[in-house]
Image (cartoon, rainbow, N blue to C red; front, side, top):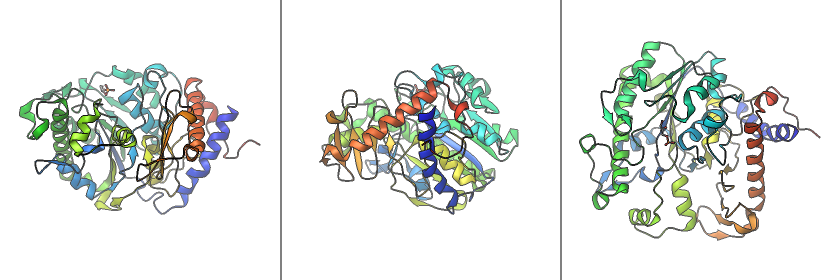
Length: 414
Ligand code: GP9
């Protein structure tokens, strides 16, 4: 407990900067809609095949939003559930299994619980069986006011694993309107982008060219469908008068499970370095759309899923104090390395790839943005800090330490 108290006290020093910045509370009382997009990798953003954009709606929306091109997913074996845990609870996933499945009976302090206390109506929406990833139990513990599962959706667009994202978004907005409560904090978890990406050809109007008929081609076509669904969601929110009083955050949950790097090299038309190969499957899009297209631009900061909850809290003007959150707000001047579950990490200037058990001597260190291999000694302090961050997170999760860490003062133990 003392180790964890010390670690979080150090993190609080970074987090409290946010409270003195202009964006702290700039969106106080606004609705928050978080879209967690299944298997959505950054590589399709801004790309075209045969002169046609894969994601035209997202490309346009990103131009009107604050975009983070150096955002990484930080998931492990728990895949979609890990992305959810990282984002909502700002702690790391486990090396093995899913926190949702293994520790749903532990006490966490996640965004829904924090926001309930601030007058928000908190809901989560996912058109699949509520027991998948043990969501029903986990969401009860996270204190969502309501979890909308497949049982709450009419399957009027059967596609992929269940309901198509177009109908999913349409019915999710219906649900929010029916609740009639604002401000709301809502997490919408998409599913149409799920492997093996074989959604019906009648649902997709995109030609993946030389990749047609391959899983990679199917992936691009699938992402095009999801992009259309997001485009329809934006229009619907505008029609319902929600667009300009809601902050919309969008991120990809994890990679697309396609690891044949020769296909990525074919897509980019050039050889990729080891660092690029690793980064391509870790980079997922993340952007925040603010009411009236405010604060649009690009932030080159290296950031990750664990930073999402502190970001939302800064924008809503809620202090992180007293909550054991490991991330640092993405819109704050404070920075912290993005730590991957395998012990690797990324900053704006370094990228560390561990090998074997993550022992520093055996890993590789790269400088960014050039991606050139550099002196391993430059990555050693970061690798050690990453190891400690993961150790503390594991202790907190496995030993149910959150209740013991709540509301502690911010001073370090001497
Ligand atoms: C199912 C969906 C899939 O509910 O979240 O999760 P994944 O297989 O991507 O972890």
